Length: 247
Image 1: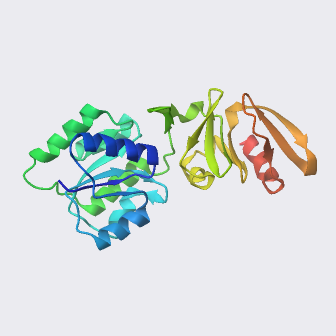
Image 2: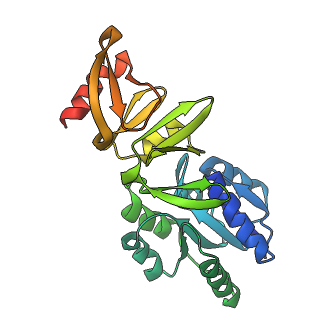
Image 3: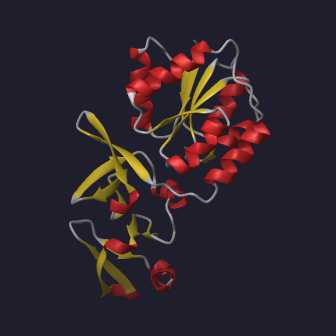
């Protein structure tokens, strides 16, 4: 079986790879963006099966199929809730909910192998399906690594994101966790009603701001419980920050 993984979260991609290898399946490639996937399809023979994340760092996955139309079967990997997933079941498109369960993966692969021919789907229908169900939807959870284990953190429990030492971290429950995304990536994935990028180095969650004090240069300093990083609203963001607070 020829397969590929298209997933922008490296821990999730590595975990899926491990599960597939346990099933004696070695993916041909691990891709992490719309751009990279399109280039791969243009240069390689299409696989039998694609494991495809819905939300990629540079866009929604259906954008891949605006440029290439492989006849491969698809198993979506997603962190979205059951409401949106009903559309996939109705349209006979398989999916795996993150964090991926080994038994669910095994069942999805078995279902694929039982088919006599690749699943037939229409690229425009797929685009409509994804647009209607996921347009303007924002990230609901993050997959993070804790020791040798993976766990999910709900977005409502994350107080802020910040960068330091060329890495990005999220802060939740008095602890920081490294993540793969950049702050630039996160700006498009987070609901702007709840999150605001106060500077090049930090994004904060409104409900976790405990105090705001004036700082030098007409700036503001924010205080979030447990966070030791200095959270300063940059001078060029001050006006937008005040407007955001009043929304």
